Length: 210
Image 1 (cartoon, rainbow, N blue to C red):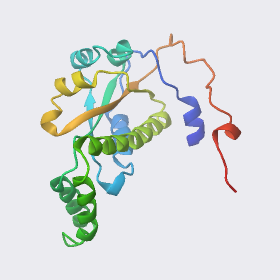
Image 2: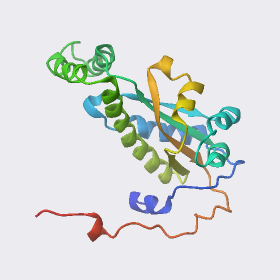
Image 3: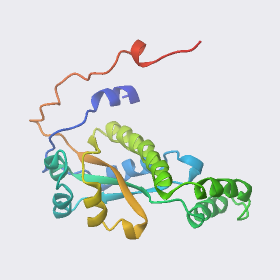
């Protein structure tokens, strides 16, 4: 199938079959798609936490908009962004880049010096918000890969981020949760499954300047 066909197939699943689990192979493909997503300056300023433990998912579902979805799906992916940009984090990533490309460390310092100044002149909250936006690119990649594998998915912002950060001890990791992705296989009783996808018409959605 083409990517467009895969995206037409998928929808935000509202009821999962708790007895059907994603294989480790397919889960890794979804994570790899997210890992390969483009990010600002190539910094990858976020991490993905994979939650399969039922008890932990039950705990995280408190105050969630659709708690049963989080509990019944196969896996929950937590996209968590850096709480701030730091010189150390920037240097670590660019050292990895130069090492991978066979370049001497510091070869890209003229660029890293510039972005360090930019981030240093912003608040930690501003930097977190910038990093958080990067997670949505990876989320989109993960959604597309799941669809290609015929794995159902539900992106979710309706969760208690403070609770999630506390339960997963994200503060100690320098992270703050941004969004979730539920993965699994739809239940045959999911009311949304047979419904037609509703989107704006192309001529309304796209505004062209020629």
